[in-house]
Image (cartoon, rainbow, N blue to C red; front, top):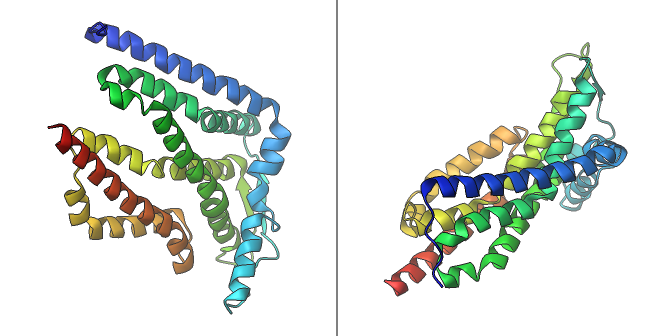
Length: 267
């Protein structure tokens, strides 16, 4: 049986319910994160400020193996975290919980997005729902891990050890520190969704593989610029961040090519 065609207002109403379900899921997981504040803050959030964090140990071991000096090895991170506003700790607690809630509930949010757009898809495209949700969630979680274990510690290591005078000691504000961690994690998670974005843009004809190949050099420059913005200004850190993004770009070209090929078969 053909699905009933919905009016514009009915589409808006349908979208509202999908958004509400997504918000409820985020709030539920955010509440769980709010109640588990000791683990969220002491283990997760403040993990990258400890010298025995996994990333620091790996970087030190790798630099020693390839014959570099101890520039990637750290014995201390000379800074403290303070709350300088009345609501500073509560605000950090709330926003960190919401961020973690969004990360954990991401697969369900993607599922709601798919449920909203699925009525406008072909039957064979609807069958790929589980694959779409799984792949987009996997890419997002890979990005989150990359942001947490690579971007965040590299940024913290640079900013914590950078100084213009021995007279200055770094006392970072709590909200400043948590904002850096949240931004690094979420930005990386969303950047890793590039193949999914390219898939849909190719489906509607805004992007082609030829166009992406043509502007590959410009994309390379933009990736290096992005790496310079979100990482410390040393070449090694920028390369570490740039490599997976470039791989994602090449993967996106391949995906765009497959989409165009499938569209040509149907026409």
